[in-house]
Image (cartoon, rainbow, N blue to C red; front, side, top):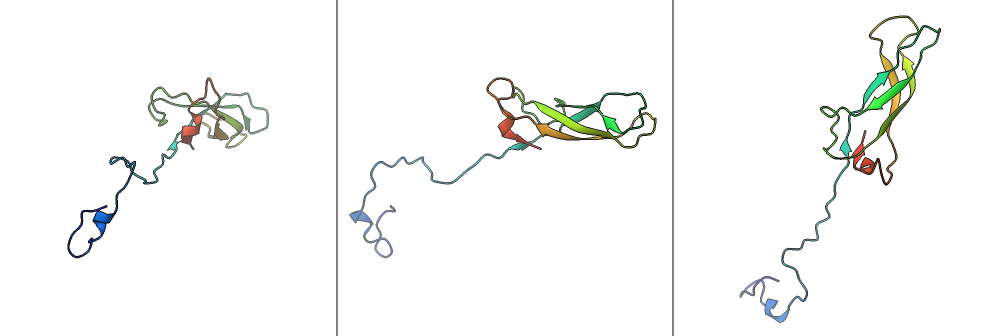
Length: 114
């Protein structure tokens, strides 16, 4: 309640507020999930006529965006080489995911997104 004045707040003296914390605010605030960059490796294989790859996902400390000390596990599945042809430096695509949070090894997973 603002102080009374002669023109716009003449009745302010008739009111009081109880149990008010002057530093409290009712603003609705939130914290959003931080995006992670997941790195991907694939196991080398001998030519077998197919494109299937065995991928593995990991978080590179320098480039992932993971906050120091946080525990987050990631995974990769459905890996495919770009072609079935023999070669080096082959591109591999895969489905990557942040594993579901748990109470011991992946406690901070809910704080991140892809």
